[in-house]
Image (cartoon, rainbow, N blue to C red; front, top):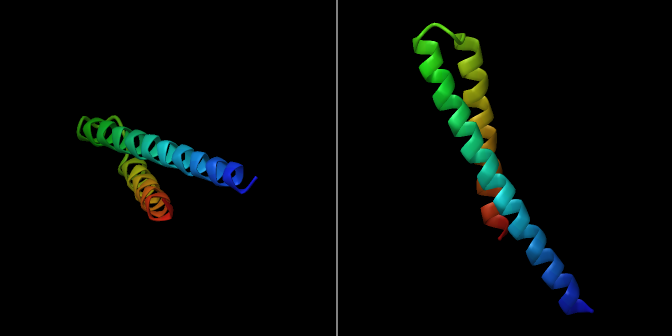
Amino acid sequence: MENESTLEHETTLEHALDVAKANHKQAQRLLDQAIAANAAGDVSDQRVEQLRNLLAVATEDLQRVMREQ
């Protein structure tokens, strides 16, 4: 029974890592697009800053999940 619990926990951590990596990648993609759109005048500086903050949170989350592995 202890083995099953450990296996489930490892699977959960692996899933958390996959989600954190995907979130980080998406946040970076959104920021890159916003920076390009901002240069063209299509996106506000405020939106770029929001996406920078989102990337910072996604980075923190990814680092936290990696530490927990």
